Length: 491
Image (tube, rainbow, N blue to C red; front, side, top):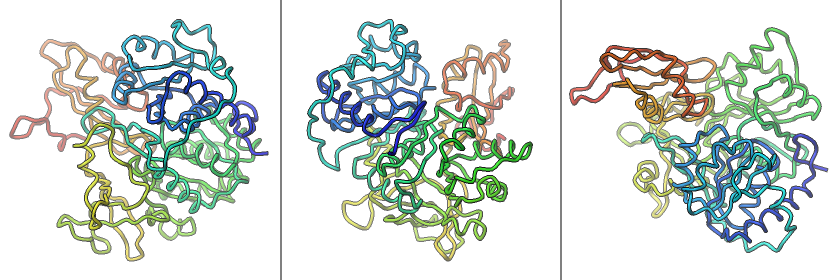
């Protein structure tokens, strides 16, 4: 039988039972079709149950990274108008203080040790399941909203990417097709479910009836290696930071995972020089280089048979979609000419939640009346075969550790430190992280700040991946003629 695993084998029958029980509880608490339900949890079976329980009543799930700090969680709860919050009891210090101000919440549920829960309005997860299986309301239609996936925006506030049941199921089918997956696969999950790359490992597993080997993170590689061997994992999804760590460990003491038949990479470019060693670690695996963004899940992939022929390419459009590159004149770019990448397909988002202006900047009218194209904002060139090569970003969003980071969000936190006069944040090239975050700080006259002071505030208010790797104190920051900070001269 296929199973969801962590920390021990769970059958799909149990998953279904718990989903229906939790769905019944949410319905009894007044959660309705279209309501947003925030799931603020670790990678666990309970999180998977929560996602499908929300979907089964026609509500909208919003998975939030458990590293998220209180101020950002408060923003998301308010921005999406959450009707329910499902979390872990060990995160109670983060979410409990918000319950007094989150007036729209109809229910709050927490898994884990109930003795940690101080707020009486929080229902233990096991108690929420006690009602048993109930009849579920109609699911709605495919064009209903299924998920909000929050991603960093250029304004500094995260934006909720709106995906329908149709856009997500289409993406699932396309991914499964080109990755050549089946119900016999055993898929490793070490990426956060709040990251759509991690989320889709769960969704693909359930769609196929395959086995998901669920881990909270890649923090303890030795434990993950043991799980890969014990569970005979066949699919290894990773990001460049994970692969860099793998290669570093392999060079100290070689190891091999013969059960793995597919290795996938996205979020940042996988360096071509990593591929020969990855083939030694995964001797029986097809290696997929891919590119995507939250606004449409996945854009393109390189056929694994071409990994040695075109190691710098991220390939062609995923099945059922179309891509093209437009130059500065708005014309289709010639082979080898650099331009901005546009995407056409059913997998494109509806837009950003409650942000029409931001949506209109990236969703543009196509030649077909009523249809929208997605402007990725990234520079690419296409060869004569139609395969793409990434050439850079046209905005200042930083991609680090597989996550998108808005410089403005980091700058706002640093600017709140007493004694900081000016701040600028940029991304700098990093072989392990893709890009590392570097922060330039100019102090007020007479201030005596240290890097330790600034870093401490960043650690307190930002997720770990958003904390700058480098800090540099400067007398002043370069300015444009209009007095705005110019980042062009910073490095």
